[in-house]
Amino acid sequence: MKHDCHYHPGAPAKWHCGDCQIHYCNRCMPDADSKKQHGLCPRCNRSMRYLGAATAVEPFWNRLGAFFRYPFHFDPLLVIAICTLVPLMLSASLVGLIVSLVLFVALLKYTYTVINHTAEGHMKPPPLAVAFTGDGFGIVFLQLLVFVLFGGLVAAAGMVGGPILGLLALALVVLAIPASIMVLAMEQSVGPAVNPLNLAALISRIGWPYFLLYGYLILLTLASGAAQDFAVTHFAPWLAMPLSGFLNSTFTLILFHMLGYLLFQYQEELGFASDLQDDQDQSADNHRDRSQRLDADIDMDLKDGRYDRVQGNLKEALKRNPQDPKRLEQLYRLLCARQDDAELYRYHGRLLGWLADRNDGAGLVDMLDALERVEPGFRIDDPVLAVRCSRSLYQHGSYRRALKQLLDFHKRFPDSDQLATAYILAAQVLANGLKQWEKATAFLGFVKKQCGDHPQAAGLDSYLEQAARREPLKGPKASFTVDG
Image 1 (cartoon, helix red, strand yellow):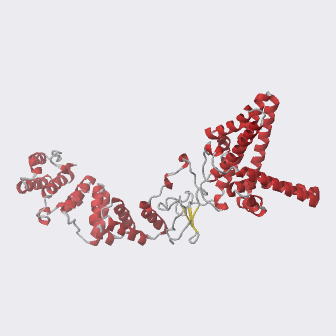
Image 2: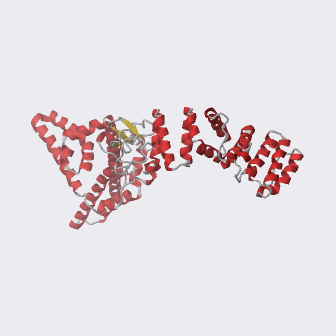
Image 3: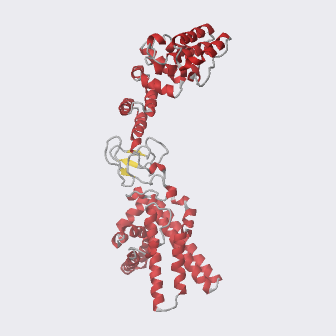
């Protein structure tokens, strides 16, 4: 059974908690270690089962083209060429016979490696060196022993029960051969590969796809035989022999790759887990990143409706990093959705600053409305923040709200170096937004009188002339930063 993530429908599950009975995808488990297959359930904090690519792998019946292309990669093609053509070039001597047998064993070793390699999630063939180096040559002789034992079983059945029982035993053995090859490749032992209980368990866990694959394998074997027969019949012996050997080796690689892929596809049912390992198949989601744990927890808690927990986690995060814009945004949107005006008021200084940084005039309007409900007549008590918010409100077109934060600025913040900036901005609001030229002129005159030595005072005459002509106040940008 293929499972989707409980929190992200459509995303294949990678982890499963047996206690909570919940499936998680990589987005839910950014801090889990897929290489070590270790992850703790976000709910119960217990170890989970890693599912690997079991829930995301493409069914084998959709990959027939890829199976037939598999032997024509560089490494398997070279293995086939060496093991097929070299024996044909050797003389019919004892040395030639020994070399041919060694190459035959190397080719079979390579094909069995293909099963393990594919089952582990490698869709690229194993390298050439695998065929001729390292251990693993013994599996060829183990396979021969398995075939001998199967032959003995059929013969014994025929001797005990006659031809009918012999034919029945033969049919069962033939049906079980692909399962036996897969078990032998994985277990590297004859016992499990001939144990009827093992073989029956593997077939039953895979289910009907095993018989579908079996049908493909029969067709593949018939196609291989027909192709070799065609080569022998229609070509000269010097060409027919290598071509027949090449075709036989090619179809064998295809067959073993399909068996390995069946193990990979049904890894969950068979009790192991592996992921796609090749570079082109790796996903960025596979990279471990503990820093995203909080984001994953917030996402899941929101979907579960555990808003108090989300709020608590965000507050803890802001204790560690009070100005984190991402956490401020998450807290702001959560508090607005919950209409929690009291908490908005508690964090209003940082939230207003975050909104001003974004130049979010609409957000500032909503925020100030919430603050008014807690404290009627609310005004920002920080001079720099008041100017920043007023500028965003002015640019948003909320002129009266912007002006409210700037009125009596010299009384509320008598020692602030923001006075000239605040009142020039107030003059712009009055003139450009509310068309109140006389009041704008009064503010400009106050700045000229009280802040004559301020750097911005140098351009006040230009503002005053524009106000006198009832023109929009647009001072020199180099001097008047309030113009944006």
